[in-house]
Amino acid sequence: MLEDKFGRRFHYLRLSVTDVCNFSCDYCLPDGYQCDSDRNFLSLDEIRHISRAFAELGTSKIRITGGEPALRKDLTDIISACASTSGIEQVAITTNGFNLPNKIRSWVTAGLTSLTVSIDSFDPRMFATITGHDKLNTILEGIDIALSLGVPVKVNTVLMRQYNQGEIEQLINWVRNKPITLRFIELMQTGENLSFFNRNHVAGDDIKNTIETQGWQRTIREKTAGPAMEYRHSDFEGKIGLIMPYSKDFCASCNRLRISSIGKLHLCLFAEQGLDIRSFITSDQPENLKNELVKLLGNKEATHWLQDGYTGATKHLAMLGG
Ligand code: SAM
Ligand code: SF4
Image 1 (tube, rainbow, N blue to C red):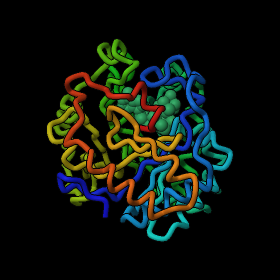
Image 2 (cartoon, rainbow, N blue to C red):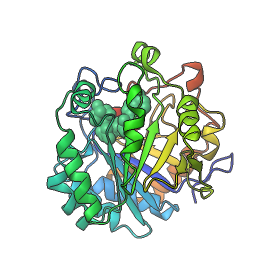
Image 3 (cartoon, protein in one colour):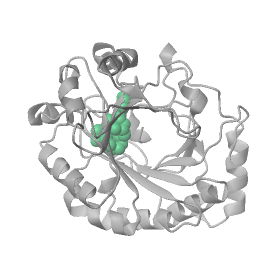
């Protein structure tokens, strides 16, 4: 089992398969994707090697993310490669959902076990303002198909003062009759979004107070569940999740490691740098890769320094997939 010097165990890998994105979310890639970095993304074989080494070290869940992972033409094969790795029990994806209606069936057939889609507004005009794309109805259609296939669905929402903060009631009401977890992710500062962050950050505690005042009850989660808080309400079929990276002790329950689309290990979303392990990934040498992972994990710090405005090497979250 991958365990760090603070006793945290890592059974969850977030694997970025591209940093390219077709959306231009104002908090992430406001000018759209800029092709200014290495685009030699992990190959299917390299993904197989990663998946196997992590599984042998006790990882049971892989989340495929990006950039926009659905831009990879071989995404279905990537899902299948992860899902068929012995020891990997859950394969999830985080997507902006742009091609969900066309793809979700093949992803599920390939072994996808859960779906997370990012939607910041149910008002099509606000959605287009934030993302630069008029795709809300397509995404919602894709979510309905996923539900009809029995796939657990989460929706990620970033509340922003100058955009959708006033829509919080509408957002919450959306899960009244839907078995979906709506997760509010507190806007994070990154290397490139400081002025946007300063204008738009909504404190996680304010969101928490709003939902607790409405009678949402916090659920007790398993010890291994990670840093998200989860709430239920007897009038609602869906659940609310809160991801508050600025809260005290957020990092104490960290259970995940990250690999970037160019094969760097990131011990934290806001680590000072990615650690280059590509040479251990390229050929099938699981023992060497496992030894390297265990060694590098020794450098994982107790916490990020985000509350002090330190964002490490993370220019934007499309680099690593959040
Ligand atoms: N493109 C896919 C998507 O949007 O779902 C996957 C990658 S995206 C970087 C993963 C998640 O990070 C999305 O839910 C997005 O809303 C969130 N995100 C991006 N930048 C963020 C920021 N600065 N603060 C908080 N969440 C952010
Ligand atoms: Fe693309 Fe996701 Fe970033 Fe939006 S949040 S720009 S969809 S990577």
